[in-house]
Length: 389
Image (cartoon, rainbow, N blue to C red; front, side, top):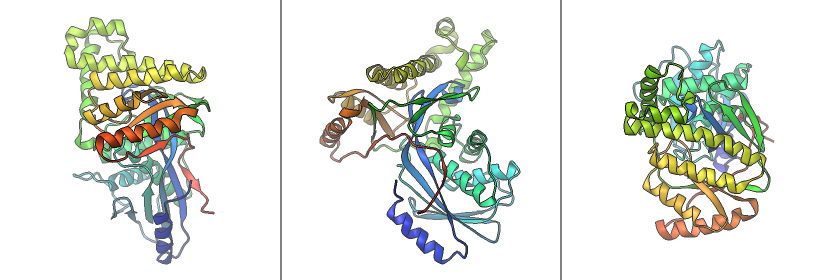
């Protein structure tokens, strides 16, 4: 995977103003095959990483300042490593500030830096550009300090940074996936125990990502409200069923008995979570059995649940899913990410993916008037330092 040309040029320009040589890092996008909104409810997820990257070049400074230039946003921001605290208004730099604060809080004495960032990952698309920024920043700041932390610990630290500094009450899935990904594999992750199993992705299976063009902003949207609803449901359930410590512990029979106490909205939120954990287990079996058709059906069922029970889709995404599912060779599709916009994940046989992509492109353009951004998934490795050669 080549670096963006503008990133290469900007590195060369920055090198002129920095006495010491820099170091290059990258972190992949996260694609969640299935298991949506289960992570912050201690549930099961089945994500993978893909070969879209957030790139970071870092130069050491002689002071304790960090200056970050984002080529995507055409913005420069800076902060001091001394006395970092959350700001009243959130912005993109809070992802980097939060990670730096977390590393310092973990006992890592960081060094000042000039940082250059660029990304192939469409912002607000549901492919976890924020977690990629967190993990690549963490790896770079650690590398400059001459330190390292276990990938699992780094994922937890970055999640905490997003909670406190970006004010998004996300689960652990995005950070854990980007920290621990293995090329060619999906990751079955239990978000309560953090036990993980690498699941090979069959070579005869194809995944296509299609961007709806609708952008979300999680702190300003309804993502946190879903987490609040889940917390409210858990409180009501635990009052009658003390053995339920998280919504992960809920089964269908108990859910049906508790429907009157929950009310319609909370009941449907819980129904999505119960059914989604079941779909994750079935999806692992489908991958192990090379059963693309079963996997596609599970993805389509997932989308219906997200649309109707969790209510985080939108008309544009629903239309794109319906368009994809009408195409020859498509076995199923669903929205991915936090919701309220972003991308759709489509599953096909590997031999059918190019033809399906072209049909989706044509039908989308006929309906919308422009061609969609598309990406064929190639399961990638984790956030790491890479050679510039």
